Length: 191
Image 1: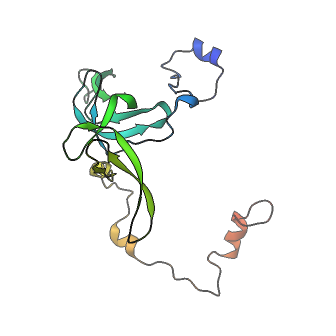
Image 2 (image 1 turned 120 degrees about the vertical axis):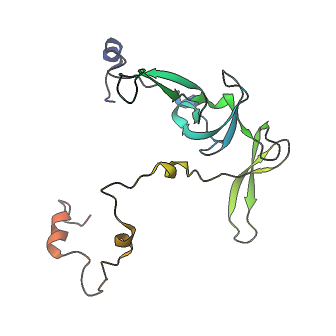
Image 3 (image 1 turned 180 degrees about the vertical axis):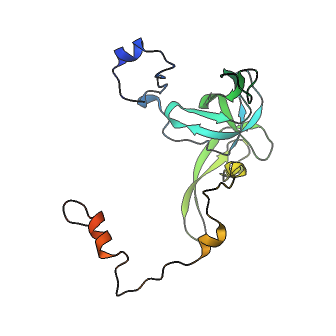
């Protein structure tokens, strides 16, 4: 959205220029204990008590999208794909209305962050632990988006990707000199 004066935005329809729904910087959370891929339970609202997986974390307004929860109908133009003119859409839930699920008993829990040093590698990290049961809550890798991948006509075949097409020669520059002159910046240096 372009930077326009607020008086102009008041006179223009919100369908043309949607107004950003952002939280004040002083109200933003400093540390997030819920990340994408976590299983959470809704604590307030119409879906209270239901569990779901976090699909997206919206840090600029302290909210999360949970798959299959807080659904609303959005009106769209009627077409062959949407004969009723309505589509169900997930809306954001405020972070205070969801709680992480304890992996041991499946109940909502508060979370404490503690430092953990791996004895083998010596790497220190902050881990999440459930307050009641003291169970470690692992940060899972979110890979559900890979199920939607479809190879298209412009995707490169795996055989071509693995083929070696360049062998470096220490006596020659990696690019031809005329190409190096072409990508050089106005001051004469190479980018």
